[in-house]
Length: 173
Image 1 (spheres, rainbow, N blue to C red):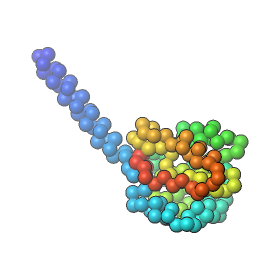
Image 2: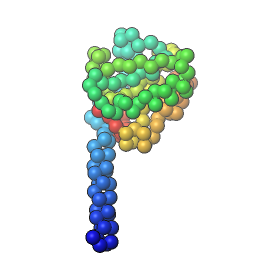
Image 3: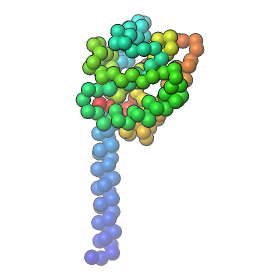
Image 4: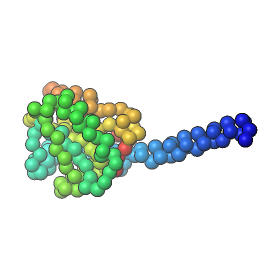
């Protein structure tokens, strides 16, 4: 085999590999709120109180980092563990706890949030502080980690209502 042909085959192989990775990566990206349901629901003046009442009725305690997952297998959910640990470390393990909820286990929650994994943060006074994804980007680890922003929203005073992050692209099911 000639040296030129070897290089051509190597370039073809590398190009094919790169194209396959690009196609696979594009399939991993999806919108967090593709139909604008969360965005629409959040425009209601009673959104914060209705969502916190829904969570209270499911026995979610105050000072909770609520992981909304799926009862079905979702690869994207496995990527949230580092974000949960970071949130616990930053918000204080003694004050906050992680609560796992399956989207279909709380009646009415799927009318607000349509994709998982999702994050809801409730502060010590049972005020809704954040609703949205943990992170954005390919696999939610090459994009923007939202932990710092979520922590700042949680400690923001005076309370001006929750931050609703419905405009995100990443790994969601």
